[in-house]
Image (cartoon, rainbow, N blue to C red):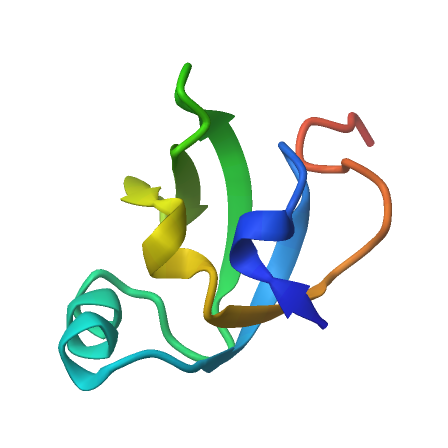
Length: 85
């Protein structure tokens, strides 16, 4: 497992655990960051301090400091989000 902020662009993962303070955890849960959900790292900001993730068909931009304590399991090792079947 690795933290969500370590995912590469287009890499897919499943959220396994959210280990942060209660206030941040509630905010993340309200946005759809829940255990078992599939998530894809889609974009980096120019500053690299904010990343965008696709979760539940919604694109959410969030600070690295807020996702570093979200543990995920990579679905596959390839950058497969844009791969054609």
